[in-house]
Length: 108
Picture 1 (cartoon, rainbow, N blue to C red):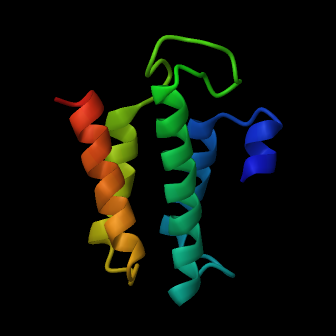
Picture 2 (tube, one colour):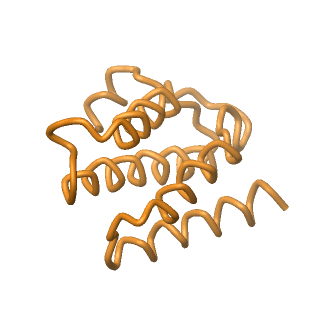
């Protein structure tokens, strides 16, 4: 994921691709392997959120805090994973924390 972001692929594009791959349920990401897509999507969302708090755009330039970050879209994706029935194990707490942090910071 870092390589794609470093190459200039925007966070939102990468997140949407991972989300689409999860919901298509195609080989090789079926069954328990779908969790890999969730974990990658959560990592991208967390990185995007963290960078938005530092006032960085996805291209690495300085912007206003939160510029370019789409909190409603990120929360919608993450909450759908929690409702999906996928066994996230302890990672579910990470997703719940990120959702809570985003809501508190951007959707008050």
